[in-house]
Length: 330
Image 1: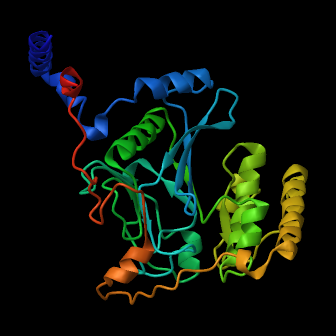
Image 2 (image 1 turned 30 degrees about the vertical axis):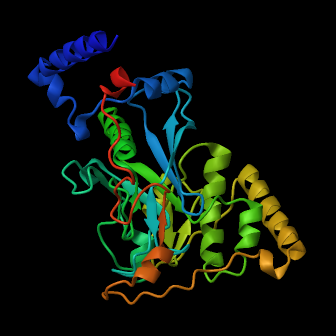
């Protein structure tokens, strides 16, 4: 039996070594094909391989969702990935070097894909956007990337980011000019809004929830604008295109279904908060970090939200995974 396994493994190795140059290039990370099981999931959900995508990020739950457009024009959830690492506290990024991962609504174009990243592959989120700049926020090179190590980015493991990158690449090949990233502190449920009611960022998060409600009701990306240094949603593309970040906002009226969801959940959050004991409200992390200074080991441990099984350098604890030949010797 052992001899037979050796022979089989040798035959497989020979076959792999004779792969043509063209086939080998297809295995380069930036050009990797979509996994077969993901393609099957698309077909089962009425999605095309090259149809548009949308990304949703949830810090507290460490989830990254890929939504994909169906043949009827609405978007449906294709897959949820566990974020490997993100740094900082719940709340938006405000200045260069604060190690905060961004929160808000961002736009990604083909130029923001980086196949030559030091972190396997990377997608620039587009921070700072018009809202960030209007509010004096600074920073650059905020990414979704591989290597499971974050200093203000959303880090995935290499296999995950390769798949996400391929989905983005296919959407652009299909004609999507830009896709939206919605980055949230947590899932915007009434319970979570109640838990975080005492946060200094609560008003900001209430504003983000309006965009979340729009998407969850319509299943389509909201048109996002900035005026009076605030986000504005649920307007036509022509309306938001004409807005100035520091200029006046137009009269805003939510669509009835969206307004009903928003007001009902706002009232529910208030009821939940009224019943909660003081100890049930979320508390902010107490670590401190001075921008531009080396971060202490204690502060680093508190600000890194890393998936179990990876060290502080983003390496998988226990070493590499087994090779494709491992099963022959089990």
